[in-house]
Length: 395
Image (cartoon, rainbow, N blue to C red; front, side, top):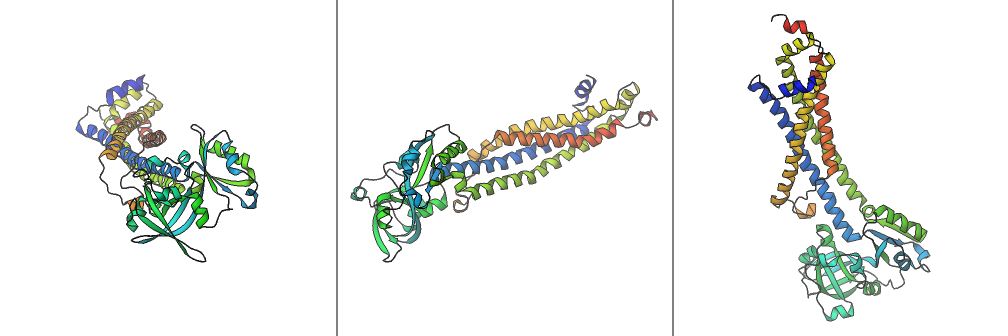
């Protein structure tokens, strides 16, 4: 109770402008450090969320890759569809080619099954315009180009492009562009195109080869649980890769960068916490006579220590509360009003994605509070073990 009384009396300094200035410098330092940390971590979390969404569209929740000769008599597709956690399955294939029109570009062909692909991939959100109907569609000689690829070779919907199929004869096959797709990942939109799976098998002479399968889980099924169930059923007949395993290096790099930035920028919060030492040193100097009188009246050294420690905790709590509130506001404003400064070819987007995560807020708040309390220990010990007689000797 005595400590609470002293905090109410001394928290808002009455000794003059110097103590008020020191108090608010300490608070503002913590606030600025937390705002900066929240902005940076929310950008890194935003990039992780952005990439997760985009790469889930590209590779679906999971991909099943048949293993060798074991697939000859194994109905992999039918087996996958019967699994309770699986919502949809679609076969596909991958191949390399050159696409030719006004320019030439290397391209990765993804062969898709028109009957089932929309069950796994939300194409209606990825087309810049719905596919057109044409004679090529009925014959299967249609192609969907990535937006950056179409721009590079000067192709638009309705144009005819040629695919150079590398082999013994280097065949050239004409295809009609019926749609332009945009996943929002620059590199992917620059190097990928889609064609019909049956046509793909013919031109690449893979009629007897087993296709790969994209797998979409039912809503609410955790990825690791669904993957474990599928692996247990298909056993050694196929290798099951989740979307984060397929793009593991990319996500690990972003997560590692986020951790490193947190450690580096936490130094700013630590420097702001150093101001707490200055504040409490000044406080103990200005209040040495008050503390000496209280000590002579029986106030324990432990209580003096806790009083000054509590001051540091209060400064930290005010700074953390203001910093988190203003940090969330800063993230919202930055996301809404930011200019397009990023190079899409490098970052896959021209705007910074922001995502404020509760875990980041808790971690920032905990570390900031811990540092403020830790930096309060030294001046608190100094005040607690100061000799009352020294402060009252000349009074």
